Amino acid sequence: MLKRLILPILTASLTSSALAQIPQELTIAIGDDPGRLNPHDYGSQFVALTMLYEPLVRYGAGGKLEPGLAKSWTISKDAKTYTFNLRSGVKFSDGSPFDAKAAKFNFDRWVGTKDWDFLPTTNNIARVSIRGDLTLILTLKKPLYSTLNDLAVARPVRFLSPKAVDDKGKFLRPVGTGPWKVAEYLPERRLTFVRNDAYWGKKPKLSKVTFLLINDPQTRVSGLLANQIDVIGGEYLGALPLESLPVLKVNPNVQLLSAPGTTNYFLQMNIQKPPFNDANVRRAINMAIDRQAIAKSVFGGYAVPAKGVFPGDVPYFKATASDLYSYNPQKARALMAQGGWTPGADGILQKNGQPFRYALIVDQGVFPQARTLAQVVQDQLKKIGLAVDVQTVDYNTWIARLEKGQYDLATNLTWGAPYDPHSSLIALFKRAYGSPNSERIFSSPQLDKMIDAVLATRNEAARTVQYRRLWTYLDQQAAGVPLVSAQRLYAVRKGISGFRIAPTEYELDLSNVTVTSR
Image (cartoon, rainbow, N blue to C red; front, top):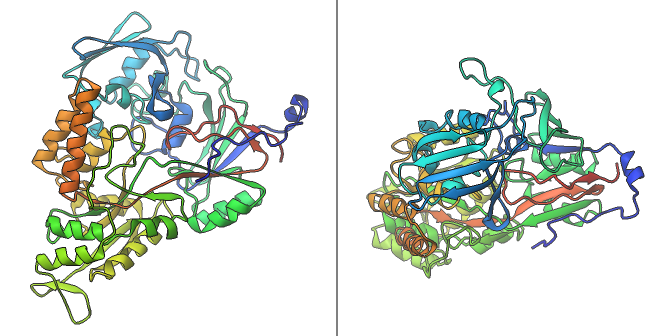
């Protein structure tokens, strides 16, 4: 594992006057168009949103919740009233004040709407009220331990200027309180930010940041090596192609940075139909997967085998003693045989005349490694007589087929900090969320009750006990096929100093970045 999370000062002798002669402009390659940057819909790229818009509460290193636009807060004894003391003197980049009235305006745009019901707080806020200019009060329907955590996510709980909408509330332009503001947006080409010199907090040293749209991962790498791009990588910006890692690692003009992953790559099965509604089939598929081989061959060692639904760094997650995730092809074959599956003439298992031949749909999208991952899974399953046809589709097709239940197997990904574990549990495992099929990995009435119970816990001890019961249940049910947790990777060209990997993949930490050479 690479241990350097902060780029060193590359030109120690560079004087401040010499530095001032170098344009402090950073270019970052991204894999998808960033969108119009409305914080209250799903049409925009996460990282671009967090450049502009700020939360009440920030998700800090190690999951620590820190003050954001709220400088402090109190929680009532019954855990149903949250009172936020807002910072004074904060303004949106259009000059209008951020105050309690502006905060309430933003909450009223999304609280209680179906669009955001994956976030537990969405439907649990009974009332949003204000007291004076700088006090915001949220009254909950029932205690919900994840409330503060929910207020740290990338959308929709960020704050848009009330002047950035028309008289009917329709979004017009991206205006936030953050350290950056939009200078130019050319769809499918680039998005340019300039420093918000009126920012209330620590101002960036950079004067401009450009997100340059480059769909092809190898072209992003070529741009970095040619010094035309300063930064590439990140799960939601445009992941590094794994085959390029050996070249990037040894190049003296590149710093390859990593941090532990907070997401798990998943193989999910459509449990609504045979044979995946059979827990033994699900167990067999889990045991047929050599996760260590995937971590080594697909991710070049920049991943660790999954030992449960979430990576070990996710709050409250603790791997059980289950052998479900141990590579055991012999036991996998035995489980299939117990279910009546026998080898056909071609070696593919069959049952009642039906061969085990199913399609695995893959969203390659921003994740260039997804197809390679699926092909390795395909080869491993074939060794126990399971035939899988890998089908690469675009993101919109992938999500539509999951929502309609039109799939056999699919690749998926847990959401990562600050959403996990509770938001991924709701979106990927709770029956009450989304469409009848949705993108759920697994669901059951008992699991719904367990998720509700853990969300209602009032103290850490009870919450830890409830979560451990939940992890045990998911393992017992072979609820999905967690594969690996990949490290978070960025490549930065020599001449960029102070780049740090942020606490989540939904943001960039550019607060100390300077350009020391061109």
